[in-house]
Amino acid sequence: MQCRRFFGSALQLVILVSLLVCGTLIAQQPSEDKGWVRGSGGYSKGYLDEPGGLTVAGSVGVRLIGKWSIEPEVSWVSGERFEFTQVAANLIYRLGDPGKRASWYPIVGIGYLREFDKAIDYSSGGMVLYGGFGARMSVSGRLFVAPEFRFGVHTIPRLTVSVGYDF
Image (cartoon, rainbow, N blue to C red; front, side, top):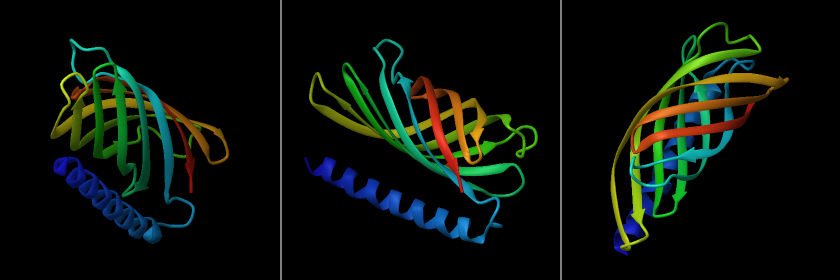
């Protein structure tokens, strides 16, 4: 039980620090090109031999230099046997012109994962590492949709669709 309390406190601290860092970076960007916020939903597996489950995620992206962006993300996966909660930092590179209506992007991420095995009431933590790609498509003005695929450690695979808003 103490481990869950520690994880909850550590997760809150990571989220707070991420928001402060992103807020500072966003404030320094030109007004027309700051960043975005997005929510994602889809399917993910933590292990090849176990059933996958619903994935829900939220993130705030900040443009760094040129086509490079950083995107802190919090996600939760609920499967038949396992639940995963993760906090990760994603690095994104937009291929093509960011001003176009649609563009592809590779994504890599590293973070901390907390898994809970419902069958034996056991939880543990560790590193999550993945790579993948997505396609970002502008729907209208600042609203966009982005289907995405990721594959890596504790992300075997992750298929999501995001809806986001540029600010």
